[in-house]
Image (cartoon, rainbow, N blue to C red; front, side):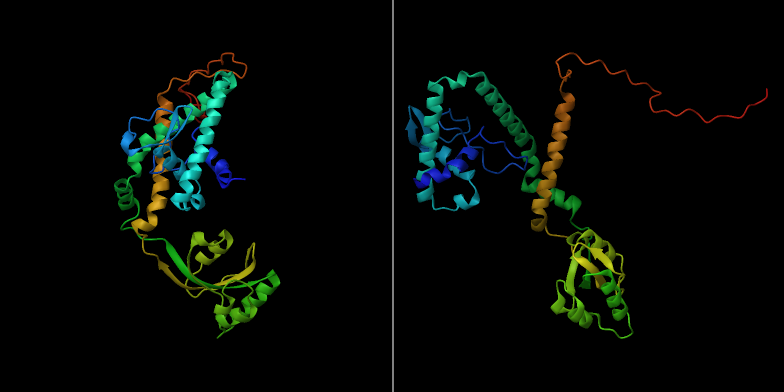
Length: 318
């Protein structure tokens, strides 16, 4: 088997119309053009985008190859271009030959194929619209403005420095609790001999952590303690914990670089929801029953909908 054949499953997924575009922030690279189709208006000049193959007269240009490579998994993109480029050209040639054969058999006129093409076209148009609407909100300038609004200058998340002793049963945890609460008891020393959990050799030391870093049961109990306090036995999926809080602090606000991906994802989701809501609200929508028959009109809303009757009044004499 030729090594280029190993790329075929990935290249099929990278070809527009053959795989559903994921709902994620648009990438910085443009969507690849389908080989053999007219280049879009923003395409590079012919001299900067040479033809690298021709199949039954349909041209495959360098931009087709580089755009397809950009859609491959990272482990394949990492291959040397001198090796990857000819393999991708071979696969695009194969794909174009298959397309030409399908057209020769008039499969493009098959109703089911046409329906699938329409669905793929609709999907690409949706993605193109969302990219156009959302892209200005995902620039570095826009994300930095969002960072200044939401994060910069605000106190960071609370953190605690805690130790714990993890044992298998509640009875063991109660014995440990009695032991660590004795006057002069050394929690860290007891943890080294009794605990079975992370940080045992360090006296059960977990360092500083945020609430979301731990399983909910542990986090709720730990963050309810003040510095120096020891918890009652706490059960989690890992066993039974006895927790001691050593310090509490407010973490510094994260930098823009540390927050960039979170900001980008939040801006993306917010923009998609706002765009979809706005466009859907402006569309004229008619709904029908499952059999295609008209739906009965919903009753017009009334000012009394959801209203409660006034409280009963005692009889009054005139």
